[in-house]
Image (cartoon, rainbow, N blue to C red; front, side):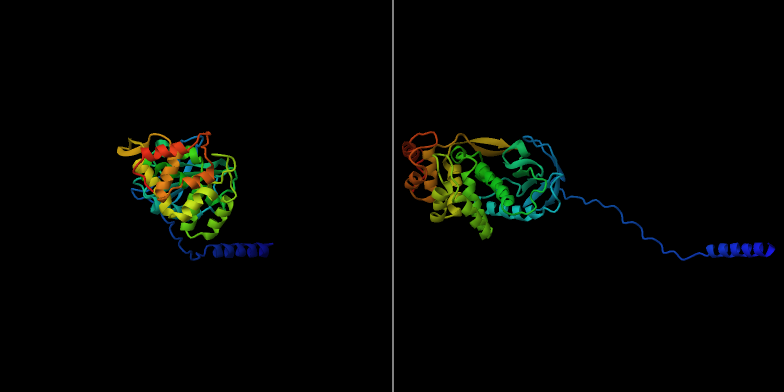
Length: 323
């Protein structure tokens, strides 16, 4: 028993001796300081609370540069990165063709997933979106916007086109809206954008779709793209004729001054009739488009009125438009 105790005591002493040895311990590197990126003074806000229509989301800024500011709601997948590049390209091309849109060079691009299906624009001339040029696109699909092709870019580009028709040349509103609705104008605008961005596959895809599209206005079976816009585009100057229409509107169509954020702009005072529509497009094309209009639309406007007398009067009312 004594020997056993002695051996046990010796083992304990050895164990304590082993545990008392100080092993070298490498000092841990200090944690890096928490540094929050500080935006430059002219940076767009990191968040933006929606306050238009039924939209109430707190948007998060995910990217920005001098061309675009991209915001997502909380349901858009972080893997969606194409808007920063594509929307910047489309916006810059649009400004190249139609001129600037206000003093801020940037387009504010918003995307939603799982809500707000469809899209709408905002412009620098309207308080609704805080005087910003905006495209706001939503989808009821929580996995929306992943591919960045087909409808993803079609809807996004469509909304830029509304900014063109409603705020180009420093003038608010779209006098032709009641004629081409929402929106036959986009059919040719988008085709031109895809060509201008050197996206021939998208241009062909879009053309194929538009060539079979029919509408009920101004008469049943009207093919706006095939029988009106595409012939004008291909035969009378392409981007030049598209921009020329809005230039003539800004120069000749009735307007009034408005004040926007302390700066003077203008606003169209009324919508145009069908005869004026044909007259202004003829001026942009530098050619009499009356025969083309008769083929494309027939002799009456959407309300059933003969547009020939309207065209005759338009030539008198707007004599500076010649062709």
